[in-house]
Image (cartoon, rainbow, N blue to C red):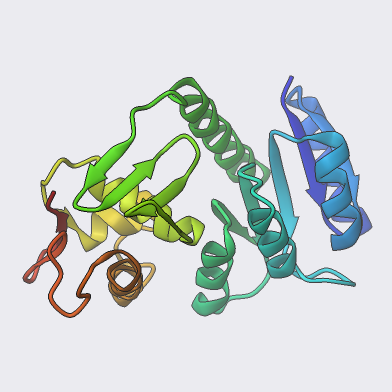
Length: 229
């Protein structure tokens, strides 16, 4: 039975989420604010978190930053009533794995939860994956760590996911649309491709010896990017 922590201050919505999730067979814990939610992560050890971005004390972005900063890799599905693209992108950059906009259908929410739990299960099953190397860079997919010449390099969750997406192609080109779908879970019309470009620029800044003349994270003009070892 998967454990789900719902961090939501709207009492009616929280009750509805709990009812729907328990009907599906999940074990559900509730938290009405961000501070309580952060504490519950330690005590409950959830398999997935449903997190509202607008909370009465600390907001969902702060909760995400705290969790990822503490090394918590639990999947997080954010709930947002905001329509601004930048808010959703910021949620991803803080460490969210997926999102649902309010109002949402219960069927869509449950489908996204199932997908995130499946991805987490696959990741756990392949936790012994071999480390990847290119140039002076060593990537440990299981520990989600990156080292350059033995020195730890801090990547955001999305930067790490983007790096893995490029590594897994073994030198093949990834289009911007493919990367948006795999890393940000968007279709190719939902977010400007500049989102990918900005994250690639950050990866180069952190990983390349000369970011202005990259040797590994290469641009394929008018198509996308590929990783050369």
